[in-house]
Length: 181
Image (cartoon, rainbow, N blue to C red; front, side, top):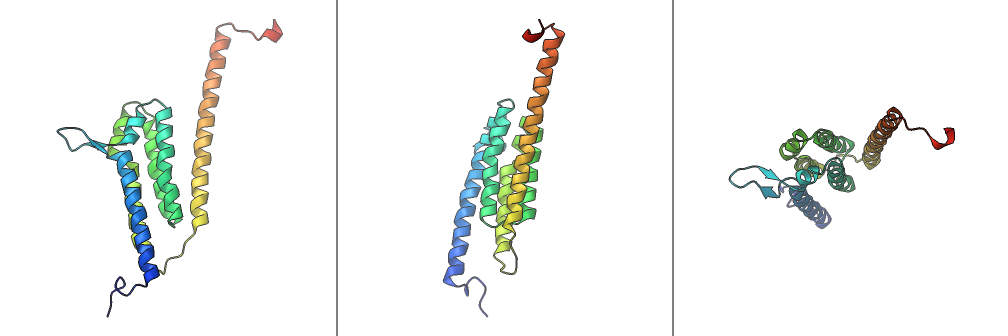
């Protein structure tokens, strides 16, 4: 009896090779984001994500946008909604905790959401090569859109709070609009 791998059709073998190339590319990307560099004399590894996180506020947002690339690629490779949801949860945890000064930067180095997401995707693709599984890409895209809407809402709420703080500051300093003078 032949194994699945040796009896696979040329098309199935090409598909496996395409998945493997994609996964290798995404593993390399995740490595650049989370574990490209090593602190000399230690086993502590970090990448561009924690470095970007050092920039207050904006750095974490840039790192989040760059990290979403893995999620979009996961959907393109046929990852299911559960995998995409776990990937987004990893990114959300890293983003929210990453906003806390110092603690967030340490968390970024330890958590490594991109490496986690690459492992999740690799496990999913390995399981996906079982032809009995059905795909629901629309649900995955819906999850990404919902996550994006949540991020926009959070940024809008933050901007709203900053505007209110400035308005309160102006009012407490005796500022009066020109139309009422």
